[in-house]
Image (cartoon, rainbow, N blue to C red; front, side, top):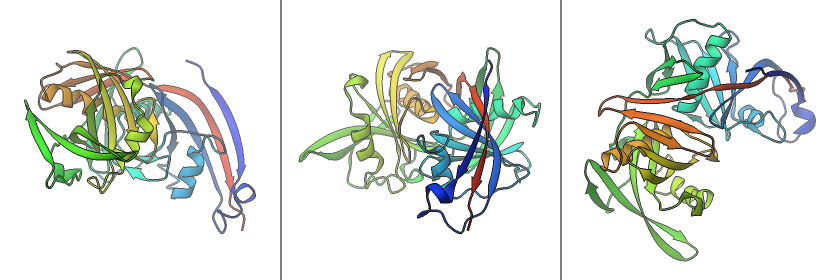
Length: 314
Protein backbone atom coordinates (compact mmCIF):
# COMPACT_ATOMS: atom_id res chain seq x y z
CA UNK A 1 0.00 0.00 0.00
CA UNK A 2 1.47 3.36 -1.00
CA UNK A 3 1.45 6.34 1.31
CA UNK A 4 2.30 10.02 1.13
CA UNK A 5 4.86 12.25 2.77
CA UNK A 6 3.64 15.58 4.12
CA UNK A 7 5.67 18.38 5.67
CA UNK A 8 4.08 20.48 8.43
CA UNK A 9 5.59 23.75 9.64
CA UNK A 10 3.85 24.90 12.79
CA UNK A 11 4.59 27.93 14.93
CA UNK A 12 3.18 27.28 18.39
CA UNK A 13 3.84 30.77 19.72
CA UNK A 14 2.13 32.51 16.83
CA UNK A 15 -0.96 30.31 16.94
CA UNK A 16 -1.11 29.81 20.70
CA UNK A 17 0.76 32.81 22.06
CA UNK A 18 -1.28 32.83 25.27
CA UNK A 19 -0.74 29.14 25.98
CA UNK A 20 2.76 28.39 24.70
CA UNK A 21 5.65 30.55 25.83
CA UNK A 22 9.17 29.96 27.08
CA UNK A 23 9.28 26.52 25.49
CA UNK A 24 11.86 24.82 23.25
CA UNK A 25 12.29 24.13 19.53
CA UNK A 26 11.54 20.65 18.27
CA UNK A 27 11.79 18.93 14.91
CA UNK A 28 10.76 15.37 14.28
CA UNK A 29 9.57 12.88 11.70
CA UNK A 30 6.28 11.09 12.29
CA UNK A 31 4.19 8.36 10.73
CA UNK A 32 0.40 8.44 10.75
CA UNK A 33 -1.01 4.92 11.16
CA UNK A 34 -4.33 3.25 11.89
CA UNK A 35 -5.67 -0.05 13.14
CA UNK A 36 -9.31 -0.53 12.04
CA UNK A 37 -9.90 3.20 12.31
CA UNK A 38 -8.16 3.76 15.65
CA UNK A 39 -5.55 6.26 14.44
CA UNK A 40 -2.10 7.08 15.78
CA UNK A 41 0.90 9.37 15.40
CA UNK A 42 3.96 7.14 15.73
CA UNK A 43 7.35 8.69 16.57
CA UNK A 44 10.81 7.16 16.81
CA UNK A 45 12.16 8.58 20.06
CA UNK A 46 15.01 6.08 20.51
CA UNK A 47 17.93 8.41 19.84
CA UNK A 48 16.50 11.90 20.40
CA UNK A 49 14.93 11.09 23.77
CA UNK A 50 12.61 14.08 23.45
CA UNK A 51 10.37 15.02 26.38
CA UNK A 52 6.72 15.11 25.32
CA UNK A 53 4.64 17.16 27.72
CA UNK A 54 0.85 17.29 27.89
CA UNK A 55 0.55 20.40 25.71
CA UNK A 56 2.63 18.93 22.88
CA UNK A 57 0.62 15.70 22.87
CA UNK A 58 -2.64 17.66 22.83
CA UNK A 59 -1.44 19.80 19.93
CA UNK A 60 -0.18 16.89 17.83
CA UNK A 61 -3.47 15.03 18.40
CA UNK A 62 -5.65 18.03 17.54
CA UNK A 63 -7.54 17.34 14.31
CA UNK A 64 -8.00 21.01 13.46
CA UNK A 65 -4.67 22.59 14.41
CA UNK A 66 -2.27 19.63 14.62
CA UNK A 67 -1.84 16.33 12.80
CA UNK A 68 -4.81 14.64 14.44
CA UNK A 69 -5.04 11.24 16.11
CA UNK A 70 -6.67 9.27 18.91
CA UNK A 71 -3.26 8.62 20.47
CA UNK A 72 0.46 9.34 20.14
CA UNK A 73 2.80 6.33 20.27
CA UNK A 74 6.49 6.61 21.15
CA UNK A 75 9.13 4.01 20.27
CA UNK A 76 11.90 4.23 22.89
CA UNK A 77 14.78 2.25 24.35
CA UNK A 78 13.87 -0.17 27.10
CA UNK A 79 15.81 -0.84 30.29
CA UNK A 80 14.01 -4.19 30.58
CA UNK A 81 16.43 -6.89 29.40
CA UNK A 82 13.50 -9.00 28.16
CA UNK A 83 12.12 -6.21 25.97
CA UNK A 84 13.24 -5.13 22.51
CA UNK A 85 11.67 -1.67 22.79
CA UNK A 86 9.69 0.50 25.15
CA UNK A 87 6.15 1.25 23.97
CA UNK A 88 4.59 4.45 25.34
CA UNK A 89 1.02 5.53 24.67
CA UNK A 90 -0.53 8.97 25.17
CA UNK A 91 -4.23 9.77 24.81
CA UNK A 92 -5.25 12.87 22.89
CA UNK A 93 -5.83 14.71 26.18
CA UNK A 94 -2.14 14.28 27.04
CA UNK A 95 -2.53 11.52 29.63
CA UNK A 96 -0.21 8.52 29.42
CA UNK A 97 -1.91 5.11 29.55
CA UNK A 98 -0.79 1.56 30.13
CA UNK A 99 -1.46 -0.14 26.80
CA UNK A 100 -3.27 0.03 23.47
CA UNK A 101 -3.92 -3.13 21.49
CA UNK A 102 -4.61 -1.45 18.14
CA UNK A 103 -1.53 0.70 18.67
CA UNK A 104 0.60 -2.36 19.39
CA UNK A 105 -0.12 -3.68 15.91
CA UNK A 106 0.96 -0.37 14.38
CA UNK A 107 3.99 -0.37 16.69
CA UNK A 108 5.53 -3.53 15.20
CA UNK A 109 4.65 -2.49 11.64
CA UNK A 110 6.46 0.83 12.23
CA UNK A 111 9.52 -0.95 13.67
CA UNK A 112 9.78 -3.27 10.68
CA UNK A 113 9.12 -0.53 8.11
CA UNK A 114 11.79 1.72 9.63
CA UNK A 115 14.18 -1.26 9.92
CA UNK A 116 14.64 -0.67 13.64
CA UNK A 117 14.59 -4.45 14.04
CA UNK A 118 13.88 -7.50 11.92
CA UNK A 119 12.84 -9.59 14.92
CA UNK A 120 9.47 -11.28 14.77
CA UNK A 121 7.91 -11.51 17.25
CA UNK A 122 9.10 -8.55 19.31
CA UNK A 123 8.64 -7.93 23.03
CA UNK A 124 7.56 -4.46 24.06
CA UNK A 125 7.76 -2.94 27.53
CA UNK A 126 4.57 -1.19 28.57
CA UNK A 127 3.88 0.72 31.79
CA UNK A 128 2.80 -2.33 33.74
CA UNK A 129 4.44 -5.26 32.04
CA UNK A 130 5.57 -6.84 28.79
CA UNK A 131 3.63 -7.78 25.66
CA UNK A 132 4.50 -10.00 22.70
CA UNK A 133 3.67 -8.72 19.19
CA UNK A 134 3.95 -10.84 16.05
CA UNK A 135 3.51 -9.95 12.37
CA UNK A 136 1.45 -12.48 10.41
CA UNK A 137 0.64 -12.85 6.71
CA UNK A 138 -1.82 -10.62 4.83
CA UNK A 139 -0.94 -7.51 6.85
CA UNK A 140 -2.29 -9.03 10.05
CA UNK A 141 -0.68 -8.77 13.49
CA UNK A 142 -1.19 -10.91 16.59
CA UNK A 143 -0.76 -9.42 20.06
CA UNK A 144 -0.38 -11.44 23.25
CA UNK A 145 -2.17 -9.07 25.61
CA UNK A 146 -0.17 -10.06 28.70
CA UNK A 147 -1.54 -10.30 32.22
CA UNK A 148 -5.30 -10.19 32.73
CA UNK A 149 -6.96 -9.41 36.05
CA UNK A 150 -10.53 -9.24 37.32
CA UNK A 151 -9.79 -8.02 40.85
CA UNK A 152 -11.71 -4.75 41.46
CA UNK A 153 -8.85 -3.41 43.57
CA UNK A 154 -6.49 -3.43 40.58
CA UNK A 155 -8.53 -1.11 38.35
CA UNK A 156 -9.30 0.31 40.97
CA UNK A 157 -13.07 -0.10 41.31
CA UNK A 158 -14.75 0.84 44.59
CA UNK A 159 -17.53 -1.75 44.92
CA UNK A 160 -18.40 -1.25 48.60
CA UNK A 161 -22.16 -1.69 49.22
CA UNK A 162 -22.88 -2.31 45.51
CA UNK A 163 -25.33 -4.96 44.39
CA UNK A 164 -23.61 -7.80 42.56
CA UNK A 165 -24.44 -11.17 41.07
CA UNK A 166 -22.49 -14.10 39.66
CA UNK A 167 -23.12 -15.29 36.10
CA UNK A 168 -20.99 -18.36 35.36
CA UNK A 169 -17.41 -17.21 36.02
CA UNK A 170 -18.15 -13.48 35.81
CA UNK A 171 -19.14 -11.06 38.56
CA UNK A 172 -21.65 -8.36 37.53
CA UNK A 173 -21.97 -5.09 39.40
CA UNK A 174 -24.89 -2.66 39.34
CA UNK A 175 -23.98 1.03 39.34
CA UNK A 176 -26.38 3.97 39.42
CA UNK A 177 -26.31 6.79 36.86
CA UNK A 178 -28.25 10.03 37.15
CA UNK A 179 -29.75 10.77 33.73
CA UNK A 180 -32.04 13.83 33.50
CA UNK A 181 -33.11 13.52 37.14
CA UNK A 182 -33.78 9.82 36.59
CA UNK A 183 -31.63 7.11 38.14
CA UNK A 184 -30.62 4.34 35.76
CA UNK A 185 -29.24 1.02 36.98
CA UNK A 186 -26.48 -0.33 34.73
CA UNK A 187 -24.97 -3.80 35.07
CA UNK A 188 -21.26 -3.94 34.27
CA UNK A 189 -18.42 -6.42 34.33
CA UNK A 190 -14.85 -5.24 34.86
CA UNK A 191 -11.41 -6.31 33.69
CA UNK A 192 -7.85 -5.02 33.85
CA UNK A 193 -6.20 -5.67 30.47
CA UNK A 194 -3.26 -3.36 31.11
CA UNK A 195 -5.98 -0.67 30.99
CA UNK A 196 -9.13 -0.69 33.15
CA UNK A 197 -12.37 -1.64 31.37
CA UNK A 198 -16.06 -1.80 32.18
CA UNK A 199 -18.40 -3.69 29.84
CA UNK A 200 -22.18 -3.58 29.62
CA UNK A 201 -24.45 -5.59 27.32
CA UNK A 202 -27.08 -3.72 25.28
CA UNK A 203 -29.82 -4.85 22.88
CA UNK A 204 -28.80 -2.54 20.04
CA UNK A 205 -25.59 -0.48 20.11
CA UNK A 206 -26.96 1.91 17.49
CA UNK A 207 -29.56 3.13 19.98
CA UNK A 208 -27.01 3.98 22.69
CA UNK A 209 -25.73 7.50 23.31
CA UNK A 210 -22.18 6.27 23.79
CA UNK A 211 -20.60 9.66 24.44
CA UNK A 212 -23.18 10.66 27.05
CA UNK A 213 -23.54 7.39 28.96
CA UNK A 214 -19.92 6.44 28.37
CA UNK A 215 -18.72 9.70 29.88
CA UNK A 216 -20.88 9.17 32.98
CA UNK A 217 -19.49 5.68 33.59
CA UNK A 218 -15.92 6.65 32.66
CA UNK A 219 -15.88 9.40 35.29
CA UNK A 220 -18.07 7.60 37.87
CA UNK A 221 -16.92 8.02 41.46
CA UNK A 222 -16.56 4.25 41.70
CA UNK A 223 -13.64 4.49 39.25
CA UNK A 224 -11.17 6.98 40.81
CA UNK A 225 -8.70 6.56 37.91
CA UNK A 226 -11.53 6.56 35.36
CA UNK A 227 -12.28 3.63 33.08
CA UNK A 228 -12.79 2.66 29.43
CA UNK A 229 -16.41 1.73 28.74
CA UNK A 230 -17.56 -0.92 26.25
CA UNK A 231 -21.12 -1.33 24.95
CA UNK A 232 -21.54 -4.87 23.59
CA UNK A 233 -24.32 -6.33 21.44
CA UNK A 234 -24.16 -10.12 21.14
CA UNK A 235 -24.96 -11.48 17.65
CA UNK A 236 -24.20 -15.16 18.25
CA UNK A 237 -21.72 -17.34 20.17
CA UNK A 238 -18.75 -16.13 18.10
CA UNK A 239 -19.70 -12.59 17.02
CA UNK A 240 -20.39 -9.32 18.79
CA UNK A 241 -20.80 -5.67 17.89
CA UNK A 242 -18.92 -3.19 20.06
CA UNK A 243 -18.65 0.54 20.66
CA UNK A 244 -16.13 1.89 23.17
CA UNK A 245 -15.85 5.18 25.03
CA UNK A 246 -12.13 5.53 25.79
CA UNK A 247 -11.03 7.52 28.82
CA UNK A 248 -9.18 10.66 27.78
CA UNK A 249 -10.40 10.36 24.18
CA UNK A 250 -14.14 9.73 23.83
CA UNK A 251 -15.72 7.25 21.43
CA UNK A 252 -13.26 5.82 18.91
CA UNK A 253 -13.83 3.70 15.81
CA UNK A 254 -12.18 0.78 17.60
CA UNK A 255 -10.39 -0.16 20.83
CA UNK A 256 -8.20 -3.26 20.99
CA UNK A 257 -8.13 -3.75 24.75
CA UNK A 258 -11.83 -2.88 24.81
CA UNK A 259 -12.53 -5.65 22.28
CA UNK A 260 -10.60 -8.06 24.50
CA UNK A 261 -12.53 -6.98 27.60
CA UNK A 262 -15.88 -7.41 25.86
CA UNK A 263 -15.02 -10.85 24.46
CA UNK A 264 -13.71 -11.97 27.84
CA UNK A 265 -16.84 -10.76 29.59
CA UNK A 266 -19.06 -12.70 27.21
CA UNK A 267 -16.98 -15.88 27.44
CA UNK A 268 -16.80 -15.77 31.24
CA UNK A 269 -20.58 -15.25 31.41
CA UNK A 270 -21.15 -18.32 29.23
CA UNK A 271 -22.60 -16.24 26.40
CA UNK A 272 -19.68 -16.49 23.93
CA UNK A 273 -17.14 -19.05 22.77
CA UNK A 274 -13.56 -18.43 21.66
CA UNK A 275 -12.59 -17.26 19.09
CA UNK A 276 -14.78 -14.14 19.10
CA UNK A 277 -14.97 -11.78 16.13
CA UNK A 278 -15.54 -8.24 17.35
CA UNK A 279 -17.26 -5.96 14.83
CA UNK A 280 -16.53 -2.25 15.38
CA UNK A 281 -17.26 0.82 13.27
CA UNK A 282 -13.66 0.67 12.05
CA UNK A 283 -13.39 -3.04 11.24
CA UNK A 284 -13.00 -6.46 12.81
CA UNK A 285 -10.74 -8.00 15.45
CA UNK A 286 -10.44 -11.66 16.37
CA UNK A 287 -10.02 -12.48 20.07
CA UNK A 288 -8.69 -15.82 21.32
CA UNK A 289 -8.97 -16.88 24.98
CA UNK A 290 -8.05 -20.33 26.29
CA UNK A 291 -8.57 -19.50 29.94
CA UNK A 292 -4.97 -18.37 30.41
CA UNK A 293 -3.65 -16.64 27.29
CA UNK A 294 -5.46 -13.72 25.65
CA UNK A 295 -4.55 -12.92 22.03
CA UNK A 296 -5.87 -10.36 19.57
CA UNK A 297 -5.52 -10.43 15.77
CA UNK A 298 -6.13 -7.52 13.43
CA UNK A 299 -4.65 -5.35 10.67
CA UNK A 300 -2.36 -2.31 10.81
CA UNK A 301 -1.89 0.30 8.08
CA UNK A 302 0.42 3.22 7.35
CA UNK A 303 -1.61 6.24 6.22
CA UNK A 304 1.11 8.82 5.53
CA UNK A 305 4.46 10.10 6.76
CA UNK A 306 5.50 13.65 7.47
CA UNK A 307 7.92 16.01 9.12
CA UNK A 308 6.77 18.54 11.66
CA UNK A 309 8.65 21.62 12.80
CA UNK A 310 7.39 23.18 15.99
CA UNK A 311 8.82 26.58 16.95
CA UNK A 312 8.65 27.71 20.56
CA UNK A 313 10.27 31.13 20.19
CA UNK A 314 10.71 33.09 23.41
